[in-house]
Length: 305
Length: 282
Image (cartoon, rainbow over all chains, first blue to last red; front, side, top):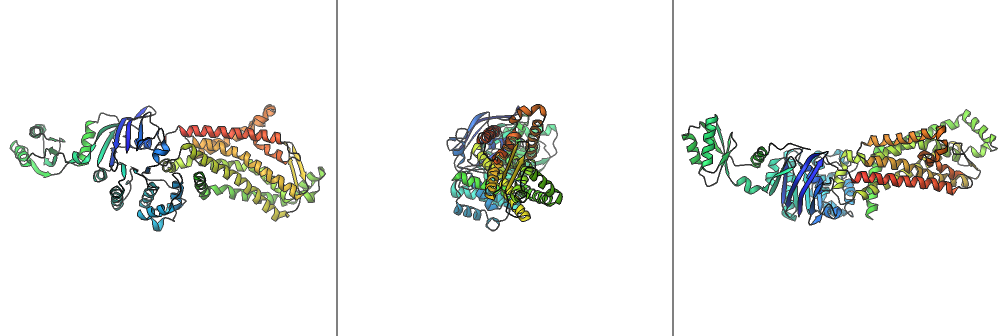
């Protein structure tokens, strides 16, 4: 549905994207992760034609964005962090204006979408009177008009309260369930990405350093958290014990091992080897763990624009 | 149809912003001031002398049409240019600064079409503003001196002198000149529009436009440049006053309007090229 093919981009000689590629299947919720300046927004900008790539291409449902941007974007809706509307106009007027750039205004559809995002009562109020959450819901409404097949979400939950974040998450998951909506979700809120996305790509320094499904990654090993005072000798012992069963650890407190390994065996081995354990508790690998591991593996890559 | 809907949206944005109306308020205040000055005994005595020296009857030519012409002649370039540059300088740059453009760029509209819509709205604003000044100035002048009377025109710099004793002749010429002023003022809006498409703040687009026009006007008045005055933009922008001549010099008028039209098209293309090649990134 959405294919990002070998994107390269420099800003004033500083590499922002270096051969980034990934593909989002129809009905998939795809997370794009990375630190600030990793290249997430640049990627999104290229998808929307706001930023011109030095080389590479983006195609949406087989239509190249560089060759036929208008046709390619006819299937896309987008939301940005802190969306900027015309504050001096009402929410409804904003929707009418933004929809006019896509096609004829469908009032019935617009009313339905407004009701769906729960803005019916305030849609005729000036946007300057809206809370951040209401603006985000208006952003969602404009992105859903007129009926896109792909949603591009750029940090959509930033600044929302927990209730707002949950509402947003449920809404997007509902859209996928009902309409098979394809979503590219750009965020650094790892918890949100973990709960919503099927697959992720991690960008660092403009390079794609990881791409894969979340489910398998997070669950491919069982994780435990240990608490102990460790010197260099004891650290080596932990290394050896885990290596003997095909496991690994972060060098401090998080250990991971294959599912077929009995944790009691590991616990016994550590205690017998003299590791002064204070606690040993199950804590499965989260996306955050995975992200930090990958980040550590690529720390030599300089951060860029 | 789509274009009209987009233009309607653009005009709604333009005319819903409070700052768009600063110019309207400023011009109403200035029209009142000019009328007050016109009602002063000294001014009336001066006007009477001027008219009598030219063999014209004060009672016919001290009229609402003559006052309206004076309002438009005095105010449009000096004060009008500020507001045209302000509005046109904002039209793209302010939306970029505020982040509105991002939402538009997520839509399947080309940058060229977006600029055409915005430029059309700026042109409509410019012409409608000129007519607003003309109509409001005339209505105020009617309230001050009555509706009857002819039209007296004297513009020494462009060497235009005309007198229309019949109200209908004078009103017709005044309406024609308003169209000419509107077309001329589009050049200010076009230059500001071009800068608005560049990577700069809205205020910078406005200031640079005004600087260019004022420098053009000042340099044009240097004696050295007198033989070349027709090459200056501000001289061409003053050519609308030829529309007041009793025998319309169409060749002279069209030559200047073609010059301005060509300039407008050129700056639009330059603005579009700059806009087209820009990256818009948060």
